[in-house]
Length: 188
Image 1: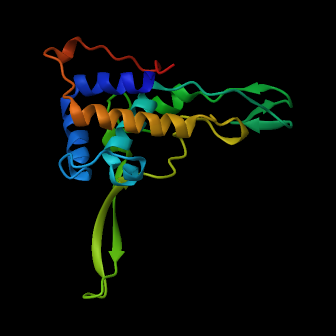
Image 2: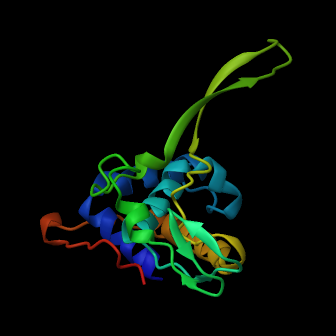
């Protein structure tokens, strides 16, 4: 719920984001002839990117891990059974890892790739495909390993469906976007 609430706040603050999601919804639903479903996720990269940017910008907390053996992290000794937290805020706001990390920008999660499309009437056609970037090693909104969030699929699916259905039926806006104050590290 907090994730969708925050996404709606960003959409009200930056109306172009809401319009881009609404454009994806209209394209997918053929102008409202059907409802968005989870099967549409791959074909709605801007919507998914917006959800990811809310997660990045809001820096969700990470479940603690426990060292299972003596090891080193970044040159520091870590003894077995030490509780270790990933500094998700630093991962999500580091200028070393992100361009303009203090700017809310869903497009940082979008890429265009060229794919080959094989058709019967033409051997191969190049096709540009817009998709959500995959495998960003420093983007860990749900943690990793055995302690990864067990509800991550529920969060992704719920937020996608709720956000698309709201924006299919409503314009989310404000007369004074400068009055909307969004704060990093606030998703929880």
